[in-house]
Length: 269
Image (cartoon, rainbow, N blue to C red; front, side, top):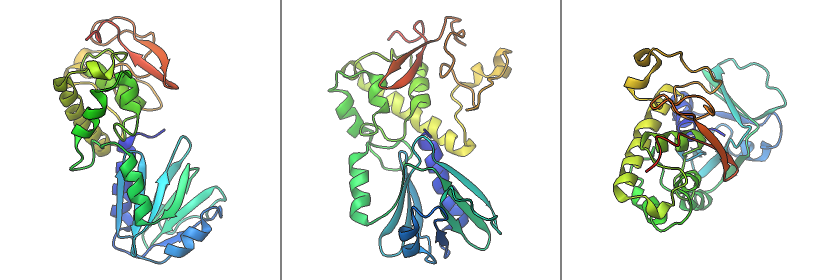
């Protein structure tokens, strides 16, 4: 499932290509045909993201709400657009660009009240200006749930997925099985600040890189990572490989229906 930086990047991509201009909205697949017809030809006023949710705003407080889920994909291209296949849930089109959405978990036209309800149930997002990490801290500091599970709970922190969860805990030497209530305030402040930094870089580069400059392949004289997800990481999807820092074996285990990755030697705090 795409993590929050991908959705914020999609919001930027929509703003750059379609904002403040009338846009054709269609549903070649037909599953979003009624909603598309209601906003077709209107101006896209705003594109924004919260966690893993994308919102496209139109006049009259109408919003297209998109959640990619596990299988959703976006494709952008220059106009004229090629003929749409019947897998395209929604197509946006203007004189210069098109965007095709396929396979999302959610693609629905909603109003302002429904949009607010989605925001209200999500935790603070490290990529949203003004979101308060104190809200997440209040839940984490009282919880007996593992910090690894809490970071993946979108009601606690919005936008963090499996990669950022594993990597930020490694970067701060924190055992992923430690209870939230045993995380110190200083540690939480450092985690939040690091997430802001890492995820902003993710938006900018459109990929996740988490290793510090002194641990890059060039700095360490090691081969670069070869993985479909791209990006240089410390532990994510590196099970049974040696840790870049201590040389110990990276471990993996299931936690909250996702694979957890960590270095037992480096993450003892």
